[in-house]
Length: 64
Image 1 (cartoon, rainbow, N blue to C red):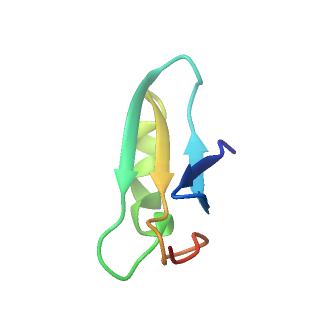
Image 2 (image 1 turned 45 degrees about the horizontal axis):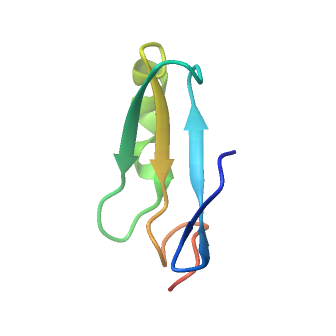
C-alpha cells in the first residue's frame, strides 16, 4: 500500500491497478470509508491506477 501523511498523521489508502497507469483518486462520501467506492474498483482498475482514500477520521485513517 502507498503511504501518505497529512499534518504528520498517516492516511489510509487502498490501491488497485497497474502502477504505470493513469491515476484515479476516489474519495468516499460523508460518514463512510474507501469501502464505499469499492464497487467501482473492478471496472476502473482495468484502465487506471486507483487510490481509494480514507479521509481523516474515517475508515482506517486517524482523526487529525
